[in-house]
Each structure stands twice: as structure tokens, then as C-alpha cells.
Amino acid sequence: MNRQTTRAKGQLTRRLFPLYTAAFFQGTSFFFPIEKLFMIEIGFTPATIGLMVAFYAAFVPLIEAPSGILADRWSRKYVLVIASVALMAMGLIGGVSQGVPSYLLATVFLSVFLAMFSGTYDAVLYDVMLEETGTSDAFETHIGRLRFVFGLAVMLTSLLGGVLASLFGLRFTYFAGLPLIAISVAALLRFREPQLHKSQEALSLRSQVAQTYRVIFQRSTVLPTVAILVAAALLTNVVVEFSSLWLIALAVGVALYGPLGAGILAADGFGGLLAGRARLDRRIVVTIVSVLLVASSLALILVQHTAVVMAAHITTAGIAAVIAIAGTRRLHDQVPSNVRTGVASGVGALTWMVFVPFSIVFGTWAEHSGVFAASWMILPLAILASALLVKISADAHSSASAMKAIDSTGAQMSSPSATAPAASQSIRDS
Image 1: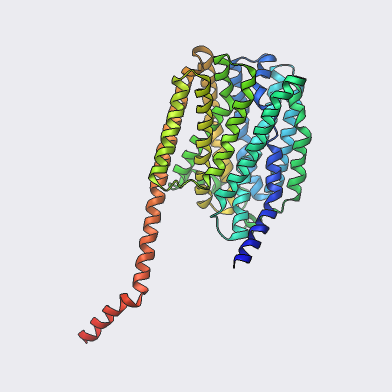
Image 2: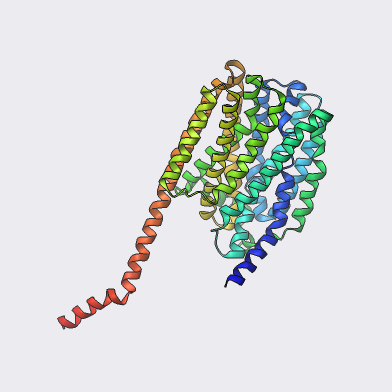
């Protein structure tokens, strides 16, 4: 039995290796820590940075839900290949940009990457788990590892990006990652895609679209999961997209931009690893996670100290990752395979639809009143995510208790010791 288990784990690892490799090289982003500096250099302001974020965020929901449905109907693997090609196009166009309009064009390709990337890895991994093991029990562990690999690549290239920018200029960092991103395409082409989503009866396009949105918006059991995923994603987007504004406000040296960017994305990766081990069905764990999330959000408002601000960003990113992975597992447990990517992408599209006005208001508020004042917009998200985590954890605990009670009752009814007294009483009565 142990030998079979070891063989099965080895087979699963070999099957997932190309996927991990692709995720690593898609995380290549030497330009990430200096992007906002480069944007300011070519003519952006804090307000137009907010508009830029809103600009590409507006494109993502237009592409994301259709891309998820495309992945379910065609191929999830090749949708990820398109994502890599779009990321290379973003680096190339961004690197040659001389002003705001050309950089906005680069963000269109970033939108394509984010839309194709979002939800697709989750769906692929979930179905691989079902094909290889027959259960989703290991999903959180493996999706956490994949996010860790992606975050590790972003962290390493962010640290190197600061060095490359110092040696060769800000613009060079956009070109440096292009050959590495191309490796992700080769890795994806070697990956054996699961076919569970094609094993079910094929739906017409209209029926599949209708089923996808019906699952997202009309299932009362799914709505809290959707809400917590949106809240967690918004928290992640805020700290990823706007973290540099706190450092600009504190007038710190350029050397700290790289470590903060790397720390945020490393926290996202380590949060992924932690999600497979965190016992979010335990009240004390949920309480600690919720308190840390709200406290880090308050720190971004009230504390104007560089070390505390950096720690608050990193903590927020890590906890948001833990919550997001727990919510993702719950979401995939609730939806069928033939609409799995579409539902996940639909949730991602909903996130971006909310983030568009959020980023505009945040950027404008930050320009007129400072980023610390604008941070009041983050606190409600942290409170909402914490409240939903408490609810979902309580629901899961109640369901587990109910299942244990059912199992216990069934065991007692089928037990000889339970049936013997009844049989004896029946004999006496007769």
C-alpha cells in the first residue's frame, strides 16, 4: 500500500512538474519593483497611475469570463500559452514606451495575461487532483505550492530587477524577462492536460454561459464564497498595485522598492504554502487571521514608519493569499468540471469590475489627501473578508459536525450491540 502511495505521488509530481515550471517562468517580472518609477519618468502622476490601473482592470473582465468559457470548451493548457505570449507582448511594448498612450497599450496585453491566467491554473490543478487521486483533498497543498513557485519567481526577479535597473536603466528590466517567459510556453506544451471537463455532456455555448453565471449568482451557497474571494483579491490588488505610493510618501530610497515588492509577492507565495496547513476550521486560527488582517489595514492608515508600513503590506498580502486559497477550494468543491474555469474566471471578472472604480477613487484620494488618508478604503475590505471567513468557517464546522453525527448514528444502528436490545425486547413481547 505504501509502495502504491509513493508511486502515485511520484506520478502526480511528474505530471505537475511542467505546470510548476510554467508558473515559475510566468512569474518573471524584473520590472515590477520599478514600474511606478518608470511610469512617473515617462509622464504619469499618482492620479493617472490610478487611471492606468483602472484602464487595464476594465479590460480584464471583458476578456476574463469569455476566456474561462473558452478554456472549458477548448483547452485550458493553450489558454495559458496565450497568457504567456500576451505577457511577452506587454514587456516588449512597455519597454519601448515613451509616454502615457503607448504604456496604456502595454497594459492591454497585461489585461489579456491576467484574464487568461486567472482561474485557469486553479481549474487545471483541481481536475488533475480528481484524475490522479479521486479526491480534492490535496488541492490546497498543490495550488499553494504553485502560487509559492510563482511568487518565488516574482520575488527573485524583483530583487534582481532593482540591480538591473541600477546598472542598465529602468527600461532594460522590461526586456530582460522575455526569454524566460518564452520557457513557460515550452513547459506548457509538455503538460498533459486533464480531460474531466470534456467527459461530461457537451453544452451549447448559450447553455454553458447561462450555467456559468447561474452558478455564480443564483446559488445561495456559492455567494459567500464569491464574496470572500472578491474581498481577498481586492486586498491583494491594492497592495500589489499601490504599495509604492506609501514609499513615495515616506520619501525612502529606491533601494527599498525592490524588497517591498519582493516581500509582498513572497508573502503571497508563502501564504499559499501556509493555506495547505492552516486549520481554518478552528475558531482560534480564524480569530488570529482576522485580527492580523484588520490590524495590518489599520497600520497602513495610522503608522507613518517605513518598517511598519512594509510589514503591514506583507502581512496583508500573506493573509489574503491564505483566505483566497481556502475560498478557491470551497468554490471548486461547489461547481461541476465543465464550467469550472468559467466560474473561476467569472469571479475574477467580478473582482476587476469592482476594482476599476476602487482604483480610480483610491488614486484620486491619494493624490489630493495622501495615500495614508486613502487607506481608509482598505479597512472595510479587511473587515468584510474577516467576517466572511468567520461565517464560512462556522458553516464548514457545522457541516462537519452534522456529518459526524450522521456517521455516528449510522454506525450505532448497524452495530450488533445497538440491535441486540431491540431484538431481545421483540422476543419478550412476543
